[in-house]
Amino acid sequence: MSLSLIGKNVGESVTLKLNETFAILKAKGEPVIHLGGGEPKSKAPLDAITALAAHLNTGEVRYAPADGSPDMKRAVIRYTRDNYGRSVEPENIIVSSGAKQAIMVALQAILDPQDEVIFPAPYWVSYPDMVRLCGAIPVPVKPEDGSFTPRIQDIVQNVTSYTKAIIINSPNNPSGAVYPPEFISEIVQFAEKKGIYLIMDDIYQKLVFGGAVVANPFDYATDFSENSKLIIVNGVSKAYAMTGFRIGWAVANKALIKAMSNIQGHQTSGPSILLQKAAIGAINGIQSVVSSLNTTLENNKRVLVRQLNAFDGVHLIEPQGTFYAFADFSAYEKSSKKLSAYLLEKVRVLTVPGIEFGMEGYLRISFCGGIKDINTGIERIKWAIDPNSPNELYIGERKLVRDWA
Image (cartoon, rainbow, N blue to C red; front, side):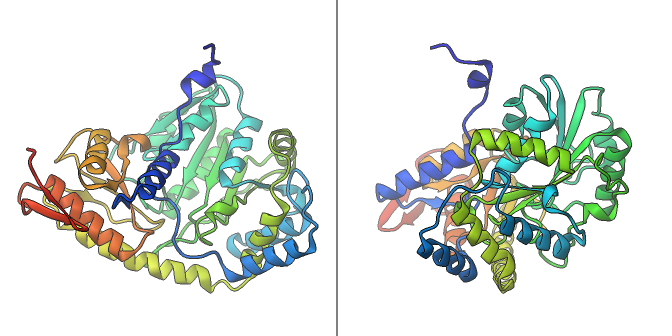
């Protein structure tokens, strides 16, 4: 079979594949625990469901404008004013089928073949392939101090004449790190000075713990003209637990938004008018659902951190946001893919290999499920890899005996 270079070189989404694996095993009745998930388990806000149902009852579910409906744009204007302290116009906004599509059409609008895009490691699994889909070159950058927090010098020394964009994701998936205001200030000013596009992936912006503060890039920007290369991406998937609704957006200069809208119009047309109504309901509705989710996640995080810290040899930097912990298991197994596959085979626990995020020896473990899944899942992992654990383990009514080294 003859495939294009893109078709040959772009792989499947590892996280989506895990979701598929979980669904298949669950349907077979396997006692599988999903600690690799990327979606909160709480229900979508009632305001979102009510708004969706009200519009559905009209029967008027039609095409939406390619860049989003006027009322959805008004909701994003309100969100941007309330959360970023910045007033924008409808022409500065594109609404997409998820924040992922907003990032994708932004990259397609700004990249030429062989351009380079820098992003700190660990990074979201899709960034490298999204860049490759544009014929461009991904440039992951590992902080030289071994932390999850990039430094401006780490970025600067990787900039070349081909660098077209930088992607910053804070709070960070997979590490849960919240990048300090000093770094955000430096990267915003550096990108402005160099004329490099800066894409701020803020999808986890509202999910932070312990008083952590997510820096506002607009606080450090000086160029608000139509030459601005700052792109802010957000959506309702994470903070509002609306992953399946697939509504995200980007805020940028008007010319770029127009180009992105043209591209999106030929790809998918506008996002579902029905799902935009739900997103509007969430954004304009009672916001206690977000604080309630934060409270639940912070409690879950404490349980997971306590469990992981009980391992002899696991190194963990406590997450400040998101709903992931990125733990170093290299003392037990250097290959994260091998370890993740081993845990699935032996004890039916799904995790995401760290190599997919650019860091070998790590596993991404999600705490957005229930406390029971966290406790049981970590108990199984400990039994599978810790030689000091009891030799037997019960999974449901099935007794497992460790008969491997």
